[in-house]
Length: 238
Ligand SMILES: O=P(O)(O)O[C@H]1O[C@H](CO)[C@@H](O)[C@H]1O
Ligand SMILES: O=c1cc[nH]c(=O)[nH]1
Image (cartoon, rainbow, N blue to C red; front, side, top):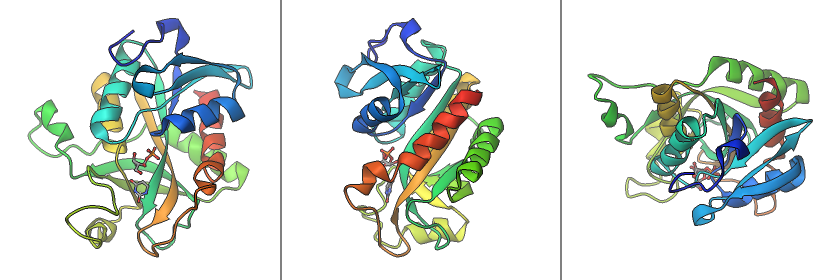
């Protein structure tokens, strides 16, 4: 137990799928897992543990932004001894070759946040994913026939559409090769590095900054199924 998680240690699987949205955790539990039960709901940050093809898997929400995923992932890695966290998130697309609904595997993340200041490094931290998880995810996506792009993402403290820097602020990150923008990958990868654990951020591009188009309300759940299938396939191999 922690201040933010009421699950017993034995109730959390070694691999955790981590969406930002608590209702996405519920959706995964109800549609993809068997014998899933709610193991934590502190602050409504829902967490379920069930089975996928016989393997115990936990899906727990992390909320929005680096500080929120920073708390949940740190507790999962340390108090719960979780081996690997696979984020299943949404993102804004920053490159025209990435279609709405395409998967993005974050090899590394850049950020505008001060997250890494706590590590007292004399330079800039570029935290990266676990390479084995990345290879398995790319392979799974290929096998299942889902378009998938691997590269750098930009994890921002600001939501892409609403910020005082203006509608064009994403373009400088796109110019440097960022595939997509989310809000959690940097803090997740840095926390995994700090705790010597494994992490992968698997994202679905739901809103294109390039075209202004995006998923409608129904696709914001159904359109995420390919990402969830890939993440569960990876979880089986961890
Ligand atoms: O869909 P999730 O996983 O919450 O991820 C993205 O969606 C939220 C913003 O709408 C931010 O958390 C961002 O990173
Ligand atoms: O961070 C995010 C998530 C989804 N869509 C965006 O535009 N940004």
